[in-house]
Length: 299
Length: 312
Image 1 (tube, one colour):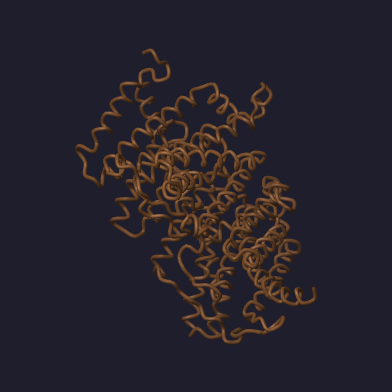
Image 2 (cartoon, rainbow over the protein chains, first blue to last red):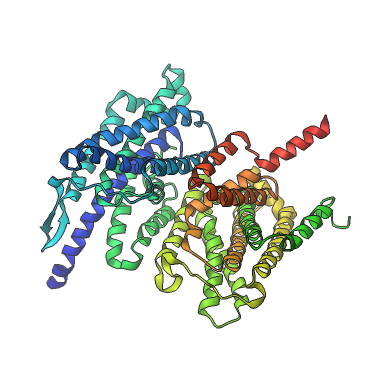
């Protein structure tokens, strides 16, 4: 027994860490999606495009600053801001006219936008694979659990995730804009009636949500090859996470990301060939028993 | 006219069929191929519209049935020693069964939740097909599916597609005009009321989902005939949204709307992607314009236009 445990657990533990660092990316992106879904009621397929734009911007910024540590930190600050500017333009020019539309139409419209964004990215950055170097302070591996190496960058992600979660909690519970947006999620007419400019509240929430998508893109950039099409796989995962956690509930997004990330990384251990099947299976099982998601939806 | 179903429309239907039958006489091989692709894509969109437009069910991931129909047919032909014709039955039947199974799981949920669970189940199927190298060929798909001699030539494939599509469209049309179709549309317009007057809402919807899955599968197996290949991208979720756009573009509430929409999209894709690599950009802009300015689709617009003319 002892030897079996000794043989299995380091592998499992390191896969759990891999899953948790994946969870961080998923959480950052899907919490933004959930925020927009909860307050604005828009199932925003174009959210994935902003994630992709964030990753490409990270590439550009990090190359502008020479690609080292400086490049990475500048990318971490500037690329999400760039995404915020893009999303601000999109919100004012298109999304603000959509808030009253039917969900199916919104889904199709935002899908159309994701196609447009995808080709715009192709125009600006081209179709080749790009890579963003891991900053030198996060390069290398730590040996843990009996010699299995684990990348230091993933530890960095494990630190960033909780920080973002706490910031989001502070934003939604302790700031004025957070309180107004929670009120607007429940009853937007009433919020408008007491003299608050709902249009700008929505714009702010939208930009914060997209900023998170961009941040997710920057953080994932050093671990994957940045390429066209990375938006379409991620947005599907983010949607499933949001549905699994409860529409509009940011903590649901966290829970959903945990389930998604861990089933993905542990599933690979169980059945290497069909590792990608497990998260989808988890979503199906969750929705079978809790059709409206794990936590309470704001809808 | 004896048959009240097609009153006044029969001459048009016959004329259209004659034109379609004569197409290979006048057109190049490439255009015949294109016509066949339009027909089968249109059938796929029409089968989606059967549940989406007429049934009001948010079938977001319809391409899965299209893909499974294709895989069912191709695998049956390649992996078994039975008659290849059997593949054309097995593919659609498997798609129909899948439609039923996914329907049973999703049916309890409403609107958007239904759609999302359906997408996740569809993605599960996609992920399995994408990864099961030993059986489905994984992300490479299957190329060069051997076909029976009659339908292996381009014209043979075209005629087979035309006949199967015409028959399938007729069956779908009959079903929409039947009491079952009326019940389905009643459920779409007012589910609570339909329940109250004794319609078994879930059962009717489930039946519709199974039928839609089956005909989606028929369209998929026709793709095997026309293109000789199957690949997992046939059931990626973006294709499903394209199918919805075809329905929307042609018009949800007219029977031929999805076919028209499919024709427009396939032709545009073929010609625009010859001119520029930014086909997705064009498609996205077209989609936005349609949603903003043609909410009833091209046929809906023409219909209103004709009626306005007739009145004045």
